[in-house]
Amino acid sequence: MSPEQIVSERARYERVAMVSIARWIDEPLPKIVCFSDTHFVPRETGWSDDAPEDLVALLRTLGDHEPLSLGDLTESVGLRASERRELFRSARLADLWALLAERRARIVIGNHDVSARDAIFERFGRDRVLDGGCSLGGVSVRHGHERAPLATELVRIVGPWVVPAYERGRKLARRGAERLSNDRVLAVARAGASFVLFGHTHSKGVDVRDPTRAWANPGCFLRSAQSFIVLEGEALALYRRAS
Image (cartoon, rainbow, N blue to C red; front, side):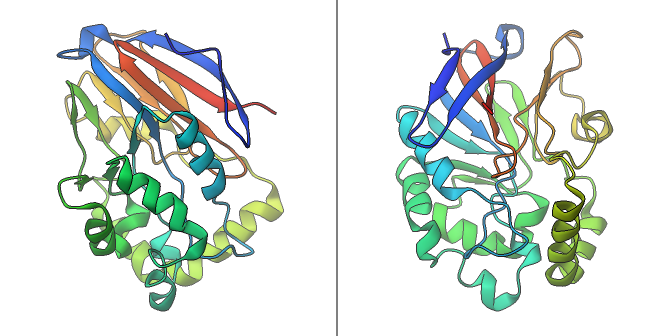
């Protein structure tokens, strides 16, 4: 059973939900720590909100869990080409990339990863990178943007200018982490699956009240808001950083 609290060297996380997923899986799952929307950048900027040190500390605490990123591992669309080339050379991110590779992390490509897709394949291996999602023991795993290719391509074109301006605006307005409605994204991300595990919205949540339309979202793992999901056996637990 997942503990009520998980304490790393940098933070304390509280369990806010725990449910059985036995009816949706083919067999008990291995230990998995699932996170999403980390938006890593090679160097800290005035607009970035990533937290690589916090994620490293969490992964080391959960040393026997396989990491699963549900997308937007990197903030590639908000970076210029010269900055994207530094994503996997950055000293700031070196410990994180090494740990993810060592632990054979699975990486779902998100809409903010698209300009770094080739570099992600090269760093982690094509067999560990999921472009479009996958099935995890019967659970449908997605990022959540997959049916909006036109919007993704537009953001890629204007991203180096629009993303930094947008993020600075969010900080000034002190807006919360949520970007989109889970219900809105779920309507297109479900694709017929009865249980969907997805990210993209930055809005954490678990809903299994309707057994034919169940879902879970780990939220995002940023400085301003940190939440994640632990999967083990037939159980799913959602955690958030304690204030």
